Structure formats: structure tokens, C-alpha cells
Image (tube, rainbow, N blue to C red; front, top):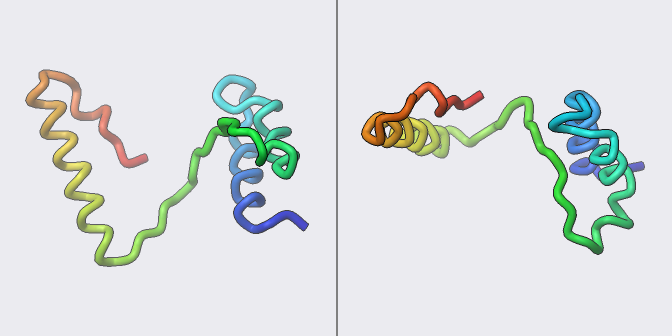
Length: 84
């Protein structure tokens, strides 16, 4: 009975519920989405995969490459920029 987008958020929260990054309270906020929609509450979102149209995939990869270059120039670890 839930809207499709709420089901996706709920499934993701339940799968990733570890009581650290995603808590039971986070899951309950999503379940009570009609009550919490009036307020602005944060919910964790950990997508399993992101689908992009073919022509938008290239800019996304270029953005990741640019971020990795920027990390190198700043003297930081570019492996922290990870699409996963």
C-alpha cells in the first residue's frame, strides 16, 4: 500500500539497519512517512545501485575522475573517492 518511492527507501533502510548508521528509529520514520512528511526529518539513504541514462553516465565518471585528481592535488588519498 506504500507508494513505490517509500517502499524503496524502506527496503534500503531495513536491509542496512545496523543501529549505527541506520537505526530502528530511521526505519520507523519511513514507515510513518505520512506523519513525518510534515516535518523535515533526515533519513539514511544507501542506494544499492544508481541507474543513469547513457549520455549522463559519462559526466558522472568525469566528475569522479576530477574529484580524484583534486584529492591528489590536495595531497590526500584519492581512493577515498569511490563510486561504491
